[in-house]
Length: 303
Image (tube, rainbow, N blue to C red; front, side):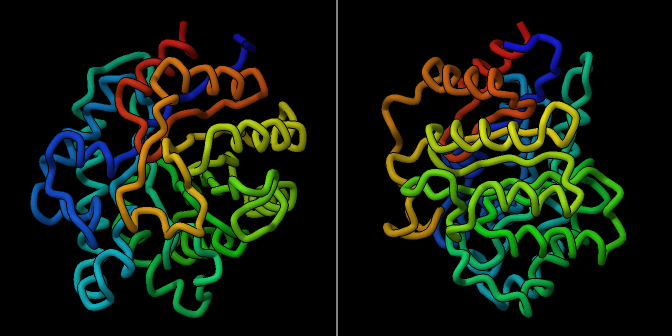
């Protein structure tokens, strides 16, 4: 492991952590339900990851989209809920014990029309969904995280939105989700190399891969770091724990997917160790990765 490179630890999967600790949680609202019915649970979930060693926490905005809220409720409450998610993350970060590094808040900008579904992306409708999220999060986010993006055009939509809002001076992290059935491609079929180049052209300070299997991310990180090099944008990843995260069985968060038995904190940290050896500087967990996973990662990268 390259001990000269500072590795940043992300949090784990927010939705499943809310479910695990007993927060309000059901379909179709998914993790957004806690914002509406029990915001104190959101702070608790963030705090669990911070206590485990997370240095960046992600706002609970993933499900604040019409896909989960419905079009009318999103129009009425989307910006309000995004603002609340930002305030709750900031509260958890500010209340964390003062350490060597303060906890940063990543404003999550999710897939706008359904996870794993690049075919549903509507460029004309995109601003109406993403702009309220950016507007609500802007007072609270330290950086922007476009995550679980299945195509390059989704990454472009993130860049365009923060530019429209005039908040593009904060770091932009672009995180793509990969096709677990085809090595080296996004779920759109676009090659990882093209996606990395696009993220760099958009001014991304970090290019990440998330919400796919750890094995798939390993290959992508190696390729991305070879492309970016040691002097460019940071590279990283955070895998999910799904048995199968391929789009053929439904969209992410459409149902409670089964978890892999072989990705306990110890075994997952072995994947993370390979990522760091391959050049990753940002690592964490996605759906199903609990505070125990993050604690093991923090121990690994900071010892």
